[in-house]
Amino acid sequence: MAFHKATGKEVWRSVSAKDPGYCPPRIVKHAGRDLLIIWHSEAANALDPLTGKVYWSIPWKIRAGLTIPTPQMIGEEHLFFTCFYDGSMLLKLKKDESTPDIVYRTERASERKTTHLHGIIPPRIA
Image 1: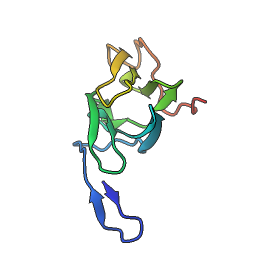
Image 2 (image 1 turned 45 degrees about the vertical axis):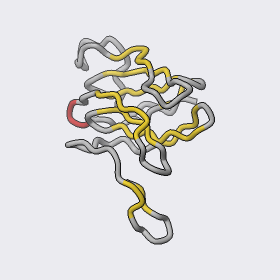
Image 3 (image 1 turned 90 degrees about the vertical axis):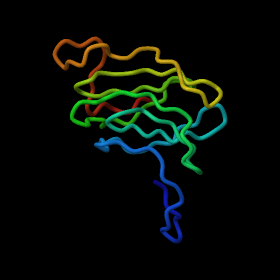
């Protein structure tokens, strides 16, 4: 949800999940617009930060709600997510508001037999 900074009144309310996760919201710039990235325990989402309109949502159930690391832009079109138990996902964003392509996503949720990076508190990617 978003609040008016002067009055504190609710401006909009959008996506929700059973468990909120831990990932802080993040605004990334892509194709000349701002995307508010909300990653909770059930999906990765991109919203219009002014209206709360959902541009896209990619379902991804995360064990124990451990959506801790902030998603990182890599270059101008890739968005990277990683978590301890369920691994990582790389999205290729599209120039319009349509759902991005999944370049890869960890196939097996296992912190012991990994197929991709399983990070819990990784450093910020420059």
